Image (cartoon, rainbow, N blue to C red):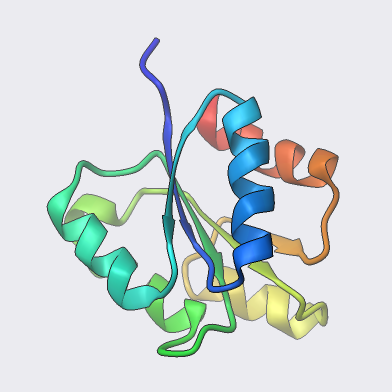
Length: 123
């Protein structure tokens, strides 16, 4: 079975390392992008990932805006997107799913929460 690729768009180094370590333990190849521009450039030059994880609050554009851009690309419209954020109101979750996300993780999350959330998309 081929290795699954997960694109993680996260601007906080500690969160990058945490997610990368957990995803690696699940047998995935993890690509880290620090912002939306890096992510869009990577997506333009590489094969379609099996999963995208997006932080909502980033310095250039929001994860919501990036999600809409991703969903606007025919080749990427079906790639699962998991939002990760410290925003924990029902409205935030609703808005993330409305923008095209498939799941929502509230930071800080436990390793078990992350694994349960992403496993269906990379199995």
